Length: 272
Image 1 (tube, rainbow, N blue to C red):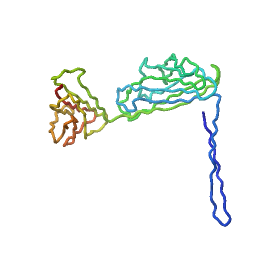
Image 2: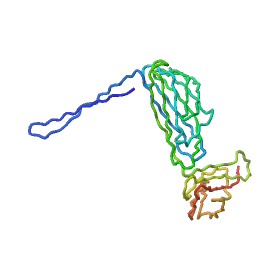
Image 3: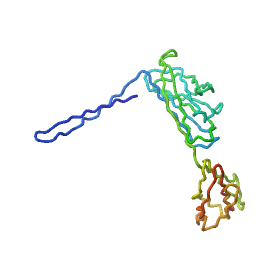
Image 4: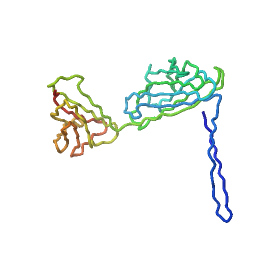
């Protein structure tokens, strides 16, 4: 519901004094509307690299006192930078304390359209989720606009609409850690970090830290940048504390070229 606020101001001059002012209290009035639609659009995660799948959510909320019919959602393709993942859409109606699945018909034209088979009652909302793949290799940020529409009071009522945007931003670096799914006491295992520079310029590695498990006895580390092995000296380029905290702080400038990767491999033995 919309809230109207109001406050008055009084100017006054005491006898023989200077003009001053005083404000009244603030009054609030809840504005009841017969038909109202509110749209919220969000993305997760809010950072990306090319090829990532982004989970988008659209919330249609009935903020009026009357029911809304034939709800639909249209979404642009972020200026051609997003590609809808076929079959990824799902929707749910929340009303009267109950959650009900909603059938979704998807039209993959421009714009992408989701037709929702539900009546949206007063105070209820429809939660729509779908996924899109980032296809751009150059965009630094991608803005997507979701527009909700519905009919007031009946399937032939006037159209009501609202819109909201969601923005995702290209991340300069991504880091992915991999380790063994299973291991036994006495096994030699490795933790591997793959660091990818998705930007258009070199980026330096300043520090990497990793709290190693108690049952992991450190034996060595390697760093490969752009396919080239980079020698590391313990105490100078990295340290491992008594409680197993590994910290890499290169004494040299460890640049990852634009579009390339660095691979850090930490090796150890599983102890009892």
